[in-house]
Length: 244
Image (cartoon, rainbow, N blue to C red):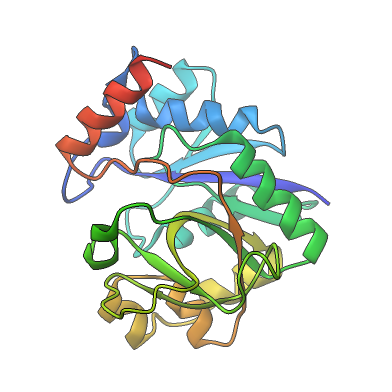
């Protein structure tokens, strides 16, 4: 079974415009992500973007990138267009790796791929332990509630995804990591569905899958990668990666 990794990326992020090309240790964020994904050695890696500057940067750093439309509502729509443009016939799984997590763990990428193939899942994603109580109420950090604990099942089903979690009971609530792996037909089905009310209200596209009866399995990641959404995030990750 073959996996293709596609990394969606664009310059026009609302909170930190131009972030894919911000440099850490002399290399852009998007090229760091590409190299991490490539190092996982689970399949070919392509960056899908609407910006020629990103295509040029990735290629200058030895990567592969493809230009897509500017009219996509979500990253999943972008990876689906890239998949069609690439016209690959022998792919079983498509992995969507976020373009703004330059310190994502290579072994976590491998873990998700292995679990998808072992369980023949429709959609898989990752989550990590929450170590800071403030995260439960932080709307910028997405949480996932799983149906069974990781002790009972190494790839349990997601019950729900949320931005804010106020309840006292914290059992089976984890920090969701924005990496997805789709079985090919499931990706085709997913992009054919209209954005659901739940998805639009919460700004979480994974809710579209649950709202349409598609199961999402969740693997336990070794750590939460730092997503770069703000200038503060960028300075924090720059400091972390400087000493690696």
